[in-house]
Image (cartoon, rainbow, N blue to C red; front, side, top):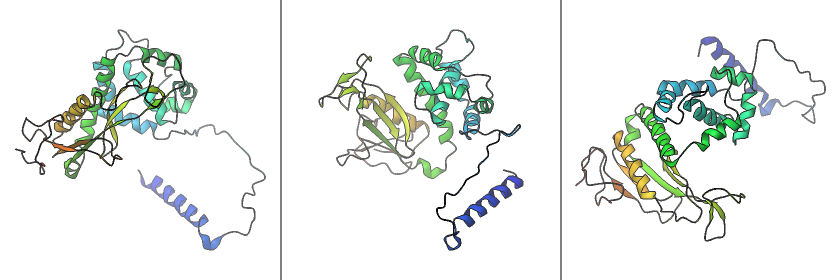
Length: 286
């Protein structure tokens, strides 16, 4: 940030602080008194609601996430004209810009400033994005999560040493109801609710989702949890966390947790084998 922008922001902050000063309140009542408002369209200056989208895209490129998606995902044989990363980032940026479904991509497509911020002539429309989603199988979904986690390691490597004192890994199953009647994989649970029962494995330290597994609504909470807890612990070991703690949900009063070794510890400890000894910072367990 240059000095001119810093001065402008400081001046704006002083003005708003002056307006919010309780000791200098105006005499007008009611306070909403505007009566003659004019709207103009500037020729050169344009605004965008998702102001940080360009910076987020620069972070994505610096991490090499877009190149990794195109190199490893291999959903398309040829690009006409969109690549795998174009589709994945298109849906991610739509969420960050306030969208909640694929249909909101049409709003992004018609926002010239949004397109210019990403350096794109155009982006995939909702129909094309839906076709891309239907090309995925369980294998490609897991592969995409692994690609995200590879980029995540680069972000973790830039954190201070205190970040690696302990990794708290949570696993949580939540019932997601749906009103659909013919959706693939949906089922009814013991409470009579129709929908899905996804499993979320996350790093509680930063609330980062590491793995998400979709399951039918009638599946138990623990199904496949051991598999993805093992993978989450292995991911933390790659960054030499001093210790990892796995358990159920953070909100559960009956949470069971156990300590697992990192790559600096013994090979006998894993997420599915409870280590009887608490592991001190970066020491070998026995």
